[in-house]
Amino acid sequence: MRIVHRVGPVLDQAIAAVLNRAGHGDTVSVKAALNQVRQAAPGLVASNDDLTEAILEVAAALGLFVAFDEREQYTLNPA
Image (cartoon, rainbow, N blue to C red):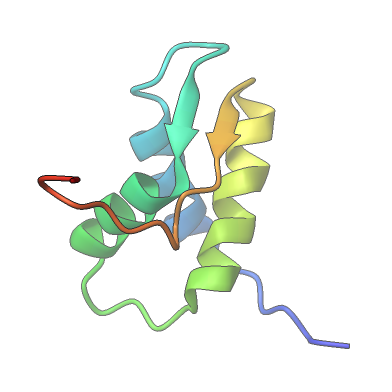
């Protein structure tokens, strides 16, 4: 069993600030939210898994749907 270290309240507020841009019932991208949170807090040492868990908790509280696209890769010109 893995021990999850909770992110702090300041980071929870940063995540909420990122997700508050979406309207109730909108779908948010985990990949985009991770990027925005990491840009807002460049010295952050929390793992992507811990951040994803925190993003899910905040998204659920705000009534948002979540796209689990963190590991997806996009091509510019698909053949």
